[in-house]
Amino acid sequence: MQHRLQDSQWWRPERLRQAQFEQLKALLRHAAATIPFYAERLQQAGFHRGMVLDEASWSQLPVLTRPEVQAAGNKLLSKDLPEHHGRRHEIRTSGSTGQPVRIVTSDLAQTWFRAVGLREALWQQRDFSGFFAVIRKFERSDMALPPDGEDLPRWGDQRTYPFPTGKAARLSLLASVAQQADWLMRKNPHYLLTYPSNLAALAQYCGDAGMRPSNLRQVLSIAELLPPETRTLVRETWGVSIADVYSCKEIGYLALQCPARENHLHVQSETVLLEVLDEQGRACRPGEVGRVVVTPLFNFAMPLLRYAVGDYAKVGALCDCGRGLPVLEQVQGRVRNMLTTPDGGRYWPSFGSRRFREIAPIRQHQFVQKSLQRLQGRLAVERPLTPEEETTLRAHILTRLPIPFEIDFVYVDEIPISAAGKLENFISEIDNPPPR
Ligand SMILES: [Zn+2]
Image (cartoon, rainbow, N blue to C red; front, side):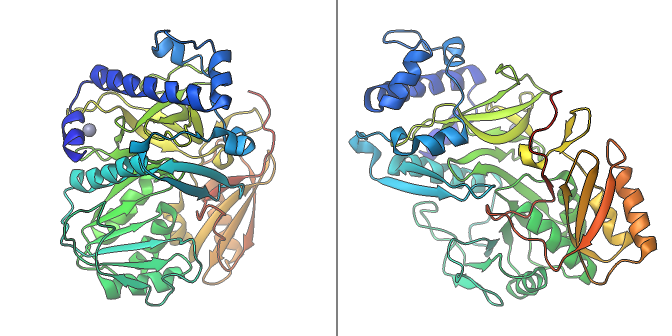
């Protein structure tokens, strides 16, 4: 499988597309034959036996939304999984709004997932004898607790890394930022994997405290969108770069950072058909932003045909590294992380947070849009801000926003983590934004 991936990354886009559509045909035949939900959906979209499956016909299939998947439940399951796909596995996602989605996948799909995981390490030329540290949320709340976390004899399971690796350690995200920094200094790993929001808080803390783990070579960012300013922060604080991965829990890896260009994410076309669609449902061109719609090519246990993962991404041009895998230049947040202006404009807001520490002792922040005019700034601080500091902070934030919002500050001990285990810097509470 890894040999196949080594080879196919250099295929031209047309050849990759052709291979994807071959696999897609097999997936559609299987879905139509074994899942009444899809048989009906495909028929309604004009699909029939013997038709030519091409871009035009494929685009007629409606996008499958998360609420549809939740409502359909077991109706999306295939009763007849081909034997060589192995056993079924269940994945439960907590969902960013706490509404879980249940996904069933197979041994075969998981094997491809692990192969892409290994590809990521190979692309980034990771030294497998190094020490690998992970700070993340765990399903069980009693796992890898601070102050010491948990030590592990190797990086991951034998199937992902089918060769000897160095040691690893993991720490639960229940650890405070100070506990994480202390743990990181004691473990002094070569690699650190965590979520971008946590990474920003941790790097900020370490920068202020002058803490630099001397062995650290690279940071891996997963599960959330990585703001460019976090790359700068990590480079300035620890002198290392970030390897970013675009994934979602329901499906796994969607795109991996290019080994040659850090602002390019290469879609993992061998395992997933990823489309970026505009509001009319047309494919976006390079430079355009649209919603991400994916079809995992090897999950025959519960096919997801044109599933909208809820993210938006900017399409990039073909990469000059020579890989034919399509490029995403930036993956942007979910709709609930978009700021809405009174004229209906929508933005992924930036608050200029890199300057916050220069203005006042702010450890963490989160902004919440309460109305079309008003934002609430939740701040976790070392001491309450003076009125002058609040005024300076407000003025600084306003220079970054498209309109002069009213901003109130409230003080909290800690910014809560969302149901999906994420620390979101911005949340909109606007239910129905005005039409554009
Ligand atoms: Zn590239």
